[in-house]
Length: 163
Image (cartoon, rainbow, N blue to C red; front, side, top):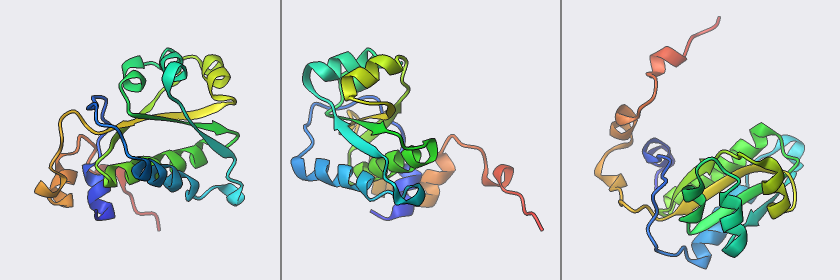
């Protein structure tokens, strides 16, 4: 998938199908996180793949538990990475997932202590991923059409030139 089309068409998704994510796709998603740039290349993170009973307990530590409970893959970014580095890592994983047709959503942590106990360290981000319950025809629109349909401020409102 063209990177700009992936960026323009990606939306946070909270409704997942029951389709499992293959080991190959899962590995590509996690590797996209590994490949993220980080301050001084410190890579101060680990990726906790949370499943089973731990996934159910982690769901209770986020603001929207069903995002985690219904996801085929839940990844917690754990460690000392700063917010910018964690954001880069999260976005890499979510865009790699979307390139494979897997939707995703970052989840706000309501109970950081519980999340840390479950994941084995300070949780910087929790990503829920799964194939979307309502498939989207990404190629049915151009990146520019997806961009125009986005519920975002217009670019002219966000950009100013400084001489």
